Image (cartoon, rainbow, N blue to C red):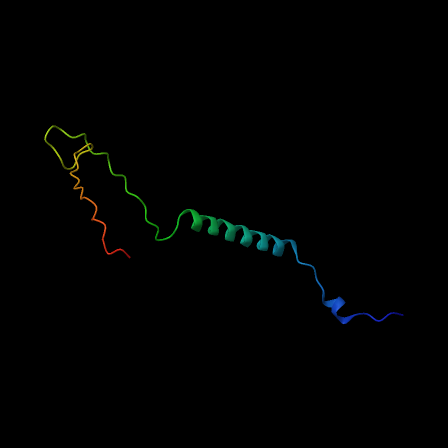
Length: 83
């Protein structure tokens, strides 16, 4: 007669309820991780800023299409040190 393994008698498969709990916890974890990726806590959200009106004649600030003065400087002369 073969000997019985004492560990074999202690084995009990998981019940249907335990499996459902594991599946529910896994699904909840996946959903929370996806939500954290989509809606980052502390993320910077852009606030809608309505477009500015077009510039009227003589207006140069707070409008779209204004004139920007640009100062162009000539390049510095090359050095003649002969390095």
